[in-house]
Image 1 (cartoon, one colour):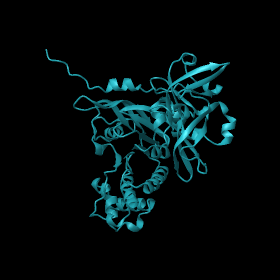
Image 2: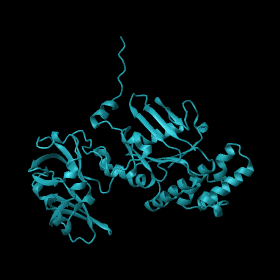
Image 3: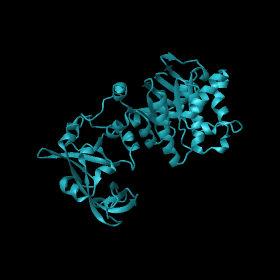
Image 4: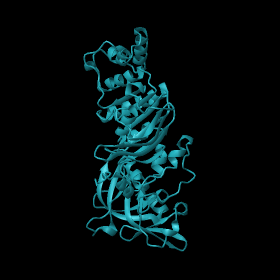
Length: 419
């Protein structure tokens, strides 16, 4: 198996535009890393550079401690699976599983042993004589993964391999991949745009946007301690409530947030203590951004009674009843006359009786409020609940560029004028 290290990796295209910027990443042997981000963020390009299918413009990649610069894809001893991978329809499942081994001139006895072992591992033994057309979509997916496993590569790269499957099969195959990683103890690097897929698969996640790294951390740390607004909004369904133009002010030693056209909520002392450079924001009128997840907005009477100073009134606009929960969308009463009012989204009990048009009270669980500066960076320091993972020391210390800094760096390089 192998470690994977990327040092100052950049990818630039012929027109001068860059796809990946200064990527530094260390993956331990046998770790399961997920690269996650929206379409076009650079995650597939990154995997293709690791595989040797794309040239590294600047920087270097090390697999098992050795630079792979100038080494062809087939000599890197890795397996890459993507949504475009397919089986040979004219070969049996046995021969499909054996295909990569035959190309490497492995003996027939060893091929037979490995194919049968992989078939047993993936529950494919009874299908070895069949053709791919006789298999279900999930069974075909197992064969494709099994074909890679049979080769015993140092490193597995997965480039959105489940994107063509329906939701039920995706869930099933996610669990299969997690079990596979536990069984074969190999190094997995998995790229996806699906935040649920990322959080359920990876031991650590690498979040990307527009070719830039945003944050490297454990799934729970990313959710609870996002370094910027992009990461905060990317994770969580429905997405985080975000309010702009927020100011902080104090009254008799208590700090309040003013927003939503005059609403105010009390911030707990524990949260105030975590604000970086609090003196720049409290009683200065300086604007910031406030975020709170829908599950931290409550309409039940018990929470309303316990937190009277975090209550905001809203007129219910939409109620989405999902069986296990309901999602309520409400317009703050203080903004009813606004042309473009904010919306408060709350996850509530499925038995809540709210209907469209109702005016209801919503209490914010202020312990879980997020605050961001004008550059969209988090203003909150990590507290004792942040989980320090030894292998993530470098990732935890990483500070991403601001949106304006990224835009500047993405500008194509201008060619020097001829004299």
